[in-house]
Amino acid sequence: MGELIRKIRSVCPVCLENLPAQLVREADGRIFLEKRCPAHGDFRAPVWNGKVDWEQWLLGTPPLPEGSALRCPGDCGICAEHEIGTCCALLEVTNRCNLRCRFCFADGGSENNDPGLDELKDAVRDIVRQCGKVLLQLSGGEPTLRDDLPELVRFAKEAGCSYVQLNTNGIRLAQDPTYAEALRDAGLDIVFLQFDGTRDDVYETLRGRPLLETKLEAIRVCSALRVGVTLVPTVVRGVNDSDLGALIALAASLAPGVRGVHFQPVSYFGRYPKKPGEGDRYTLDQLMADISEQAGIPLSSFMPSRCDHPLCGFHASFLVMPGGGLRPLSSITHSSHARGCERDNREYVARHWRRAPEESAPAGSFSDEMDFDTFLYRLRHQSLTLSAMAFQDAVNLNLERLHRCSLHVYDKGKIKPFCAKYLSPIR
Image (cartoon, rainbow, N blue to C red):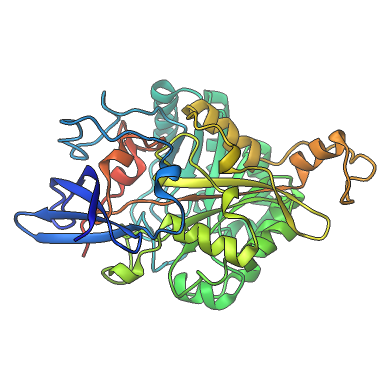
């Protein structure tokens, strides 16, 4: 019998009804989310593997007040109980896709008609009206299948979005540099590039075809255009969880074209190949421990999400040294426990993922020794950010986390927390 450490609320993975749940710590330090649906039985999923101190990581985050979250997610939108405003707003611009990935939260690839450009412009106006100067993520499906995407990017900047990010598999960017240039000229700030590993067998398993050279070409195109690229691997046990160190080393070698790596431990909503078992779960602290071991990065470099619930993600910043090594710039042991707001988080993301304006390098900027001017130059041009987002599905959903989500999706006039929008019953 494990130790009860927190009472929470969740949903039944079958019927999605709101349920009481609990977090229980086993003798070996692992923490499980447990719940029971009167109609569909007991469910259990690991949420922490004991690789990082749980209490320190939570930063004293209080539980939800008793009596709250009783109707979540239901007909979800940002309600009076929601604690965080919008940092990033995601807008789906197409359901079409030029891949058929085994794992896809949006279940892209359908032949449905795309929304019209005017409809999308109305959505952007509504996002700005409801959320203010957000970072707008254009997603899908595969958004680069739209020829009019540059016009939408330009409109979004004119409408008041602080930054525009493209979530893409990179195929068209690699094959059509003129299209990529049009996106840059329209004001695109960040390319969020699906990039699962350093070997083609990883892509063949997850994406159905060898794509490594295509991904590298997309990076080369964006780098030449001075558009910052963040690599986004979906991490799946037994597929690419042993490739994390090599992926980070590759990213560092591609700086400043590559600005960061944003890890997404696999979650089970949308499309996935099989019903998940406990052994398929890849917890946030296990990810940190594996990165630390494979890349030689101190565990103390990782810090909890600046804005969302601490269990939703981490970030860590590094200088890329001349020999390719990484020098940590952050440490949880020296960080303030004060939480940032959505605006602070948005500016942090933009500062670390956008490409800095071109400038002359100070003398000695490529040596190990540096003065303050050299340090600032390296911070702008020779740094790398590692971050993660641990999305929730119907089995491991913790409504405490959902209430503190700042990544929102625009859905028919409503602004919804990401994991609420894509929540689906486990098959």
